Amino acid sequence: MNIAVKVENLVLQFGDFQAVKNISFEVQKGEIFGFLGANGAGKTTTIRVLCGLLIPTSGSVEVAGIPFNVEGNADLIKAKVGYMSQKFTLYNDLTVEENISFTASLRKLPREYYEKRKKELFDFISFNKPANTKVSDLAGGMKQQVSLAAAILHEPEIIFLDEPTAGVSSAARQKFWDLIKFLAKEGKTIFVTSHYMDEVEQCDRIALMSAGELIALDSPAGLKKTTFCQPLYELISKESSTTAEIENISSKVKNYFESFESYGQHLHVSPKSLEKWIEFKSLYANEFDIKEINPSLEDVFIRLVEERER
Ligand SMILES: Nc1ncnc2c1ncn2[C@@H]1O[C@H](COP(=O)(O)OP(=O)(O)OP(=O)(O)O)[C@@H](O)[C@H]1O
Ligand SMILES: [Mg+2]
Image (cartoon, rainbow, N blue to C red; front, side, top):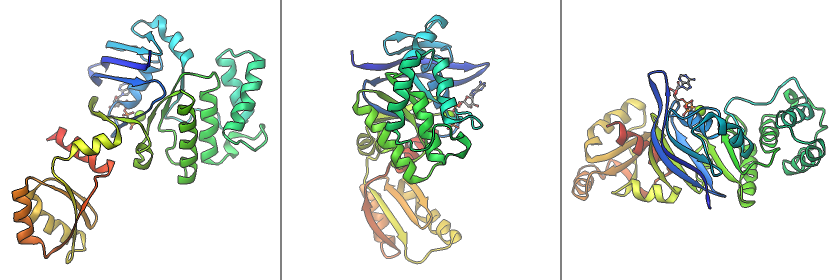
């Protein structure tokens, strides 16, 4: 069986509020699966269900082949998954060694196994400080890596990483992603959230959440291909440079486009139709530098979320 996670019609309700609204998807074994969405979209809530921490209000969930619909299975699931939660999970005033050993005791790992695994993991993350270094004395990137080591101490099949690289340097982020990719190559399933588009690009597939609903699911290339029916162009106004000027010219030309995003002076637009595009060019070609561009994932997400909200 090649399915690591199966979610069918999952609903998660907090009182009257539905944080997750009837979502369904599957994650394949060994996949790097990205989970995207604005703040409050329901990502963490879904992950908490998949880690056996929240019982589904309705719908069904299967993690590593274990169905989770009754509380009883939560412990079985917890043994199969590693979870690096969105909130920082290490104790700052304890040492690295103490943190890892604390995690090992929570997981009831035998001493011998733990000692061996700890060495393996320190190698894996290239941890080269004394093990009695306090977590508070580590750089941000290294803290995240130690936190990852703690999350995979028990060799889980599926690893949930909830914004693991928030706030760390870009070099440290890349190193973290190298670790993630290594784990996936070994056959581990990675379920990861991030707000960084360069990271999301590295996922095999991406699920996009908006206000509790799953609104798209595909590979990065697939999402780019299917989201825009018309080509995407970048327009740079030759005359307008201040915000007010750009707003002014934008309001004049907006109607020609089905999608219109302003990134400062750069406008990313997708025409409503070929006719509209020809009309736009006949009137405004002199006012803009125009070039056709490939949509970025950011273009895709903005477009999909806007379409939804319309
Ligand atoms: N225990 C709870 N009780 C009530 N509401 C909750 C609870 N946990 C989360 N929520 C609400 O559910 C919604 C989804 O929250 P969730 O944390 O899953 O979003 P998220 O996509 O992870 O957002 P972020 O990107 O900010 O981490 C939010 O509106 C949140 O306020
Ligand atoms: Mg979250």
